[in-house]
Image 1 (cartoon, chains in turn blue, orange):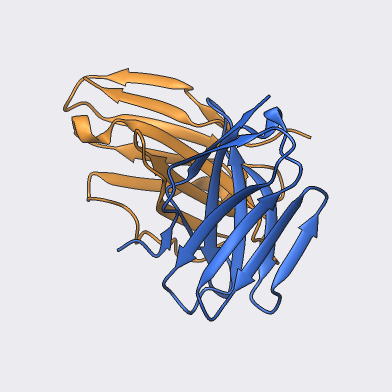
Image 2 (image 1 turned 60 degrees about the vertical axis):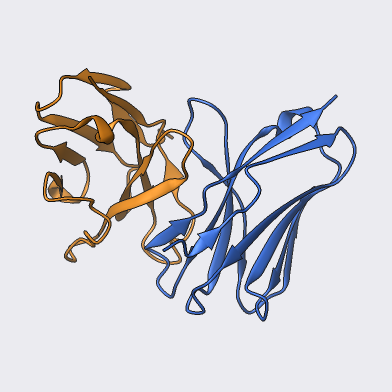
Length: 112
Length: 114
């Protein structure tokens, strides 16, 4: 039972363009959503998050959008840079935020 | 300050042997998590500890898996009678208790069962 789904295993984008990574969830009890970035042979690092009371959160080149009615969130990276090439995990948690469910990840390639 | 550390970084073991994986969380973090990432898969939740509360073990795949957290700090994940399907990267993370949504991950332990 995949409660958090990232249906695109990989995405390739040209440097300077926008990268859009998508995530869907099924559990309506989730109220906090996070994106993590992972380089090979390293642990994931936190990137950006959004609470269910918001529909947008922005941090520099990174923006997360949340559509609660569609149970869908997306991460926008603008402009994309080669250093953004990594695996991006979408994650969700319910009230309390301790048990977090991760998606399978999307591998982003940013071509110079 | 120091981040989350895990040891060993790599472990190769024979099928049927027991293994212990260690995690040192960030000082002051009261929540500690274990995840597993099999080849080509996402992060699979295994267990978390929060302060002195009973751990949430709902993600442990079988009774061969167990974990302890001593003194509210260091944690050990033990896998008994290892099987080849246990081969994966085991990741540990920690976070603050309050508003502790952001987790800080260690580099992981790559376990290979031959």
